[in-house]
Image (tube, rainbow, N blue to C red):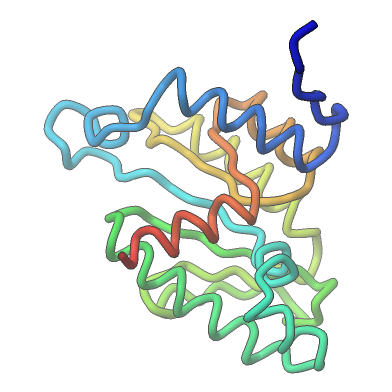
Length: 179
């Protein structure tokens, strides 16, 4: 008998990553698929669950665990700002009240070129799910990508037609873009 690799259990981060990898192999992203025929129309929109990425990335997680949320957020936004300049995409990073960032919902579009939302009323997941739907409902909607480890948000985003990636994959992509 041949050795077969055991499939990851459904609903785990490993299963989500395996599924995303299979999709990437089938349909590689190109400038044409991202931007349309002229290469300029509607740059992709990347929604990022900020605390999710911070919690996964060791160099940021240490600040979060030490209670230094401002530094963790600032460093993530710096990394995302570099990434958007490398890739030419729009990034919306959402931090929710679970991390204590805001007393009322605030929008700050000037942090390293990244649109930042400090959501006080709903979770980052709920905000992202609603705004993915809103963005994809627009005429000539851009491609939408969601970066989160939340499996329910991944399912909802995929169901709405967005592409998804885990925090791990986003971090890998950001590191690759710097090289």
